Length: 416
Image 1 (cartoon, rainbow, N blue to C red):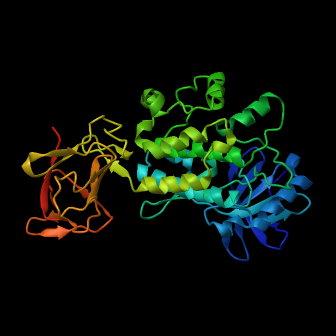
Image 2: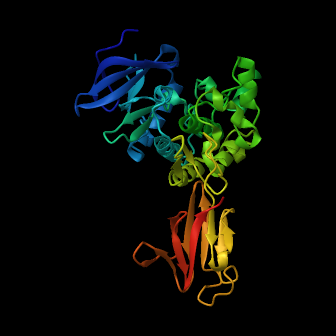
Image 3: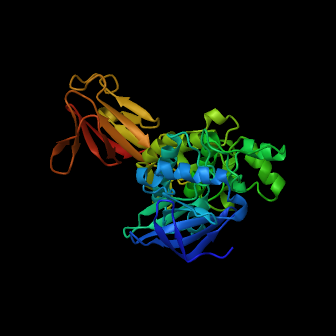
């Protein structure tokens, strides 16, 4: 069927059809112009076999939901095309290259990758809050625009494989590299592999894995189709750093040890066979936002990682992190070796100016923090005077610092 020069939507908007930008299983997408508003849009025209009443119902359902108005990084349809010959829709034109292209270049730093993850989890949550599954989350359906300040802006496209209550099921299955175990088993049994919220959660975990670690979760177990299928249906994260997963680090991407405890825990759940245990988009978003505050750079190898209380060395070069020791009067030494070490009157030989719990030292990767809690305050020597530290606020400290708890002076040194 020849592509027309102009089309009119069911609401009367005239579209000028331009160059082809993508052709996939269900149809072809064109860069187009909405003549009345001069807005650049993406027009998708479905192939003849998908020009059905069910497809039109599904398009009109998406148009009614106006996802692009609720979340500007969802490029959801907002006009229906149904002229008796052509069936399709127009959606906001999404700028940028695919996430897959961006990751292959290896030009995404950890902070940008985590920020991308935060944005993507937000878009998925917007759909899931309406009980709508995207149904085809993968790196070709995420376009990434690079803003002038090097901020990466993702756009979620191609909602045509969605699934929602009361709507006809989608005609397509989805991208093979991202199918959940239950979908693979359904296909093997000759049954419909219909997507839902839980298969979306599985796919979202893979997307975040690719963005942050620069590799698919099955990397290292994908030498043939049978091995890949087994890895995807295993229900276990083969890159788990607590289960020998670091042996896959040489196969490209980043070592899984860079993730820290919280994200590692979510990846274990996201690939689980227990559908209900897979993290929600909200859980991912909150964990990724916390991870943004814990990104460190190794001073030896310049590698980036997410540090926490259970990080003891650089996951790239294995250089041990410095351990801080508090040296009290009379030479008593208190090592900061645990995630949290409380310091108080009993710890410091009963000094009456020191509160029962005067301060808490906390480890976060290579950095040690002190949190003041005592009635008489915690002070740090700045070279000329004692400066009181704010209460219940984590303040980074280092070897060589002098602190005062009440009227008791201590200094910090690195453990030998």
